[in-house]
Length: 511
Ligand code: BG6
Image (cartoon, rainbow, N blue to C red; front, side):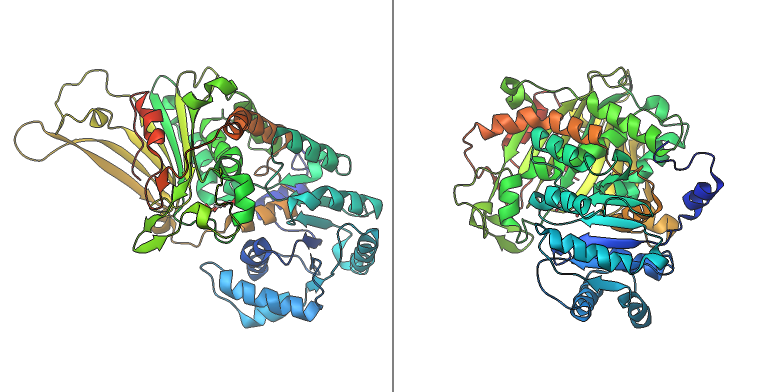
């Protein structure tokens, strides 16, 4: 049980099933930033559009830039119009929604700012019952100052609940993640800290649990006896999109693998939880993350490959190399591609490699998980062209984006005389099966935080375990001088990544 929620409490049960948000205020720190425009405000607007927001809610934005409430509302209107995904913009509803938006400028390092904020929030308490969700979407270097400021102004506790959502990156390495955890926990109890990883809010990632644990036919095969290896791919065709100076310090391993893809891996590989309840589910994820083998630094070249793109073409477009991007050092040693072979040391997965790769400026945007099953124990039929890859036809692909669905590949007889075989696919497609708009990850996760359900948020132990799993790689890479660039924009990454799999007799799929 987390935070007194869900267990045997009829009121909480109602929240769980109807997911109705209690009266509250939302305060966004970093409201002038990209995330607020692209993701947070469209998600909040959408929750209001679906009539999920409670009566009397208020949303406060903060940044250093002076702005009136009216100017903030206009800015947010433009953002919502531009970034609302697959749903209509409704002028009338916007008018209603805009009246709930307020803005308070201020320097996060000045105590005075928090006092002003406290006074402003107090004025709404009759409607919000004193419930407040603080959303940290500033530069991470301000996080500690914000929680300390909230504490000093008495905002971390109050007549209602107080929760804090923390955006990624959650630390820069294990040490800084631990320091951030301590700073947060000095002010808020762990049960009020919501560390967001938007991949966990994606419908298709949540569906992995339904697929595995609501069906009887897959789970018996989901282990080292039947699974040969697993490939997790998150390819992006975009580059660093004006985030050169952030990305230059981060790199692909920190930006995507330490958080998003290790959470996806944990979802694919975790044990079923005894009940579908926040602590139980998060315990299983955490346990899995702690079972990932931590390589010695000297072994890193056997497990991980770094890449950086040089100039090339994506589609018909000429693309500059990473080192030519604004804000990027012309000698940059940052990885824009990373491939890692993870080993899970538990009874279910011992000996089954999980290959994870991600990169910018790859040929297309695609995120998927491929579970490669072992071959039939005996081959009675010869296949079409003797390709050893085809000798293992049974592949299950969980497609996260953009074409959400699931495919199962198996051998079929080619019509006609003789026993010629060819792999064919059985496909499930989300869009055509349900025909409804799926909520964005931020809608799902904001709703969860507002109703007090942390199931899809990461916990201190998970974050620390996933930093521990990549730390030797980060340290080893930091000590190297790479011969970058080593892949062309628009290609599938460096040759060394192919060699990583070839050493085990495998090869990357071309999604
Ligand atoms: C973010 C990374 O967390 O995830 C970005 O910082 C990346 O670099 C993005 O592009 C990918 O998210 P999605 O939802 O588009 O796959």
